[in-house]
Length: 425
Ligand code: ATP
Ligand code: MG
Image (tube, rainbow, N blue to C red; front, side, top):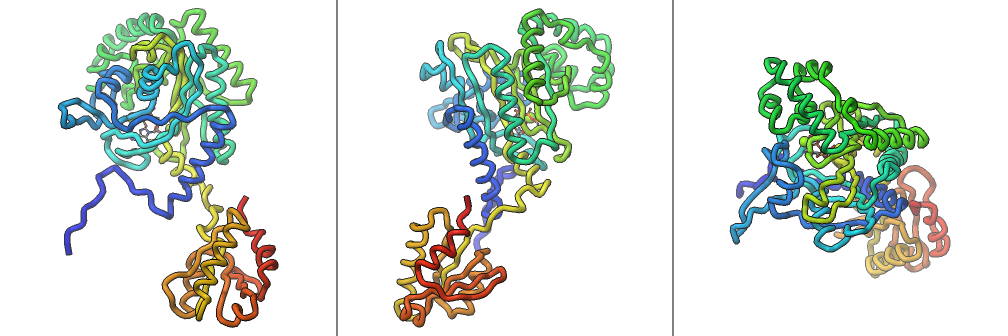
């Protein structure tokens, strides 16, 4: 036998046992954004490499070591998108969606990062995200956070996630803070790990984000950005906190939350869970008022977030939230004998039409009733319908409940009535 070719490490198939979980999450997300009046944007999976370098920043994990970059046949450097914001801004600028306009957008799709695959961390993964343009005030920051809180409530996750919140101020405030931070780090350089030493000058804020325990201990004594905020930034943050309070959303102000991408300013946040081990951040985002200008558009305030769908599905699965997923089939139709196969296929189709939403599977492939009933049971259906020569003659259908109950013979009208209760809302 020929050797089988395997999937690429860190890039997963989503098999039928899991697709129903994904579909439930995806449809919840679509309904959620629709209820807020947001519109979908779809962009290509591949972009010019320069877009991500410029948007995300050269001294970031993503650009330094995680991008799938290749030369295409023309010699252009292209990259599989590692995140969705850069592409959204690129498309918005290119099509004039952002210029003096207000946009509330969302997207969902695969992203690619060459990371070490582990639970909750993959090389192809999926993000759902929202991006809002043209609104500078804290009410919209509050809205996107309320949207995420509404999502947790709908999915039964409110008790399992918590909100970490911070502000990064303006670029001037950050510059002043960076100086103070670098001065502090220089005094304690012996306690820094290699990554932090390298980043201390190139991108000092990223040191705050270090996963090194020694560095984290040291940072407890470091100056915080809060001390460097000007009046406007402070007010923006205070207003956001008040709005969250009014909305009943609890949060923890975490001065060391900086996010791994360079484009953020003012508000940054993460929703984290303790139920997924090290990969605990489910959703992350913030304000990025300078990115549109940085990518060649007119300066436009912006705020958004991205959520890892794998982590969300994993969390829901861990908590048993998919235990009530319905089977793929409600009704399994068995038929044998002259004319019964044709009549069965037709009956199944009529039931699909009269009872929209009912999932009807026709037995195919022949075999006696015993074999057909085994298939019916395996399908997960609640009811088997049996159509044989006798039934055909009498114009009846035998209805056999598969999960307990009495067998009966029903006319077509009675059948429709009996099956109506199986239709999922
Ligand atoms: P992390 O700190 O876990 O590496 P990040 O800061 O790189 O996350 P973002 O770029 O902000 O994450 O992406 C937003 C969300 O996308 C994350 O919170 C996470 O849920 C998800 N995500 C990011 N990278 C991966 C990955 N490699 N595999 C699966 N999900 C991911
Ligand atoms: Mg990362």
